[in-house]
Amino acid sequence: MSTRHPDDATPLPTAAPGVQLQPAAYEKLLGALRESIARLAADEPFERLVVPPVISRATIERAGFAASFPHLLGTVHSYTGSASEWRALAPLIAESGPWHARQEITDLVLLPAACYPVYATLTGQDLAAPVRYSVEAQCFRQEATAEPGRLRSFRMAELVTAGTPAHCQEWREHWLQRVADWLEGLGLKPSVELADDPFFGGGRKLYQAAQRAQELKFELRVPVADGLPQAIASANIHKDHFGEAFDFTADGTTGHTACTAFGLDRIALALLHAYGPRPVDWPPHLGTALNGD
Image (cartoon, rainbow, N blue to C red):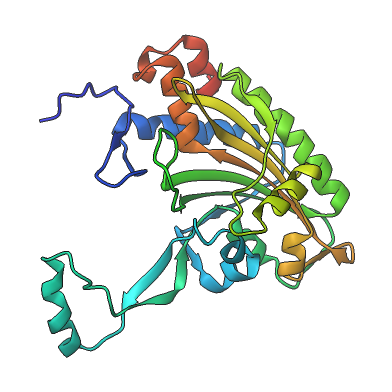
């Protein structure tokens, strides 16, 4: 029988680095965060999409993720051999041997970010007005380290828009400030920092420098453990990258996109670090901020 208090929301690590086992109190906290974000977004006409934890490999390749971040991408493989061949391979499982030698890549990969399915839905369209989507998904990234908050399996909520360059730029600036204010209301005091993505390969420094020079990515960073700040949210503008990749336009020119991402697990960990393991004991004003009471 577990000795944990039922109101303890601290997640438990599993045998796999960067993977958490979440108790009921933690899931309740994530539910409150979802509802709070929904209220935050209620004054814009976001279309809600339910996003599965896998995505077409062709979509991820077309979006450029496979080329830029192959070290983070998790692929889905399946056995393709015959029954007789499996009889030779199956005994290797008990020996931790290469039982997976006949596994081959499928048409799916694990979803690395909640927003990617949105861009594929816009393929070939000309957007007469900006579109907005609210999405959430279980995502996966093959992170190299496993310090607190550096998860391989995690929940991400995103607000996504597509339209003209002016719309996307204004929308991103608006949401950067709005998310900063929202986190302040939760008592988390984020630092807003210009950031870049972890590109792979010899050209990564050039891509990162260009991303910073154009101020495409801002992160909101908060401690999730003693002396360990992590990005718990971000506000991003992609310019025409996805418009070109998926051939959609806005007012007759290549469409631009922007997104605001909420790392639900990292926000929860930041709150637990700041206030303790039992949300039922947190200050009353925090319950009001989370639950809108």
